[in-house]
Length: 114
Image 1 (cartoon, rainbow, N blue to C red):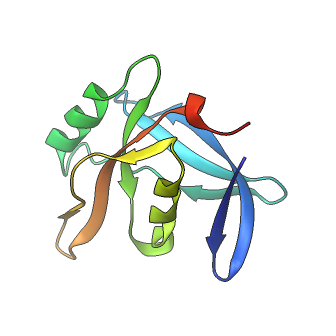
Image 2 (image 1 turned 90 degrees about the horizontal axis):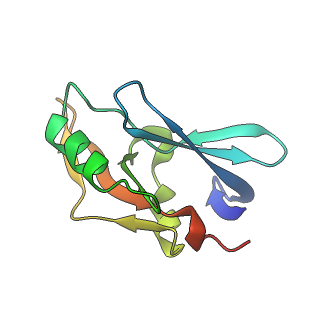
Image 3 (image 1 turned 180 degrees about the vertical axis):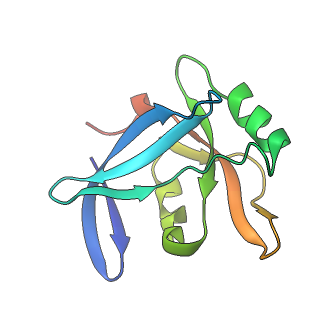
């Protein structure tokens, strides 16, 4: 479990790893009492295929590369980078007509405190 502070309250969440149909890692945060808390990843196959390829290239036996959704209800989740299990690779980027923000991240579950 890790702690996330959003909307003035601290939540304990677990990190759930799944996979989109194109093979890209899908990362969700599950709050211990409420259930689904946030979908941290976004699948930009049709919008940013180069970033999807880069995320897949970062995925191996130890870590999962993914595109972190850093807009809308996920604003503020950059705080996860304080945990060694999460790492941003390169600069955040924008996409779409509204300058929507995302970034290439990795998640390594073995670096989570148990």
